[in-house]
Length: 113
Length: 183
Image (cartoon, each protein chain N blue to C red):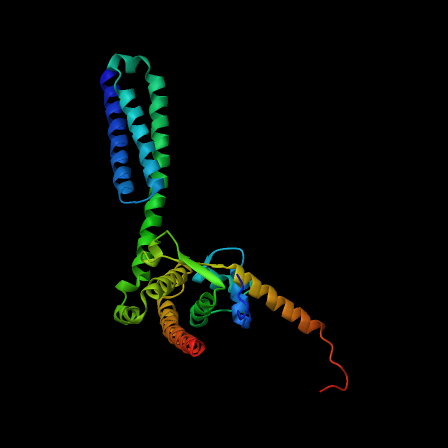
């Protein structure tokens, strides 16, 4: 639910992370892989940016997370934390797309500073 | 005639029993559903062998050619199980080897990782260090040299420390702004 003064602005990296998680449930490494695979290695999100971004998105209420049930051997039994986009997150993405579309269609008025 | 047939029968039986025992021992060391399925298949082979040998000697002699075909079938099934179990044992040994190399606890900079884990909040400890371990394992599976994997893991550990600082800073800023709003 959107509150009246809810800030729906997204930083570019936040928008990218929300987009990759949108419509699915992913854990940290899958998000990193998503960036690498889609951009063919040209755009990356590393361990230094991913978790602070997810933390920020979660605090803003744009994503929510849960522990996975599995305890994989390759993680020495540590559970995975799965993230998914909330309704508010979807709304923030829509607002950002709308803003970009408005920016692209904006025409400067001649003579006005 | 009877004696030579009986010797042949005993020899075949002993060979089969020996292979069955070897395969069983090998399968016991593999904690895998596929190994359990192979174990079941092996039990069927044993049962068929036991049924075949339960016939009396005159019966066996009278159906000698049929018996040969049946024991050949049992041997072929056993060989198939043995081949698959050997592949599985090799695969499992390679996996165990990879795990022992990939596990940070067995590594020489375990102290650094455990010290870092200690300063992380509980949730981040499980999530971040778990992801770090999984990523390290992927690099080892991709056959990168050990020293490259160590360097990358060390770099990621530094980045996680940086992440922790950023998260703490975010929390500080948001709590400050919340306090201001409350005032």
